[in-house]
Image (cartoon, rainbow, N blue to C red; front, side, top):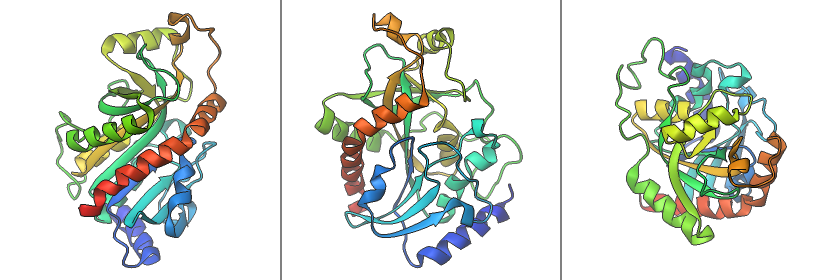
Length: 281
């Protein structure tokens, strides 16, 4: 992608939203699109209508930008994201993040559905991401650096903002009393991990695993954005069930969507409270 591609998409979105200046961008993971119900003065833009934008192909991802206000705060949200396993290259996977930055947005909330690795977790928990593992996959910054966004060799020593992550943790605890925090491991997918891979990830310090978020987080950090990430633990990862003496079963995307559906209203309340933090910014 060239800088002109990002500019073209940005200009198209600006032409549709007028003088709205979103304070926060949110990426909604599998089954978590219920937040769409909370928008006031909603403007919906289909991905397919935006120049150079990819189109989501995964069940549970609507494939549209949502722009409006929630509790008086102007927000833009991706109702459906893009994944490397769909066949996109990483420039396409992370394309919206750079567009958000060109729209003037400096705060990003990444959400996802993930598999639990930490033996203290259970399906339905929410984990605030404090770090990530991604050295199994190519970097989202591979290739010619776009100097308009950031430096060639950006530091990744603190990707996730400590202050806002802590505030999100407290909000989750208010609603669930089971707030978790931990390391998110990124795997390319689309197959779920083997028990041996999950065992290796646990040894390496991972608490949850999924197929998204990390390329977006790296790109946002490169752009100078403040990043916060939260995982909805929709299932225990492969091999974990047997470790907990729970009857083991084959993992499926339907299970992911089923658990996300059970906690969607809790998720909505958590995000609405988080959005309140941006009223004073």
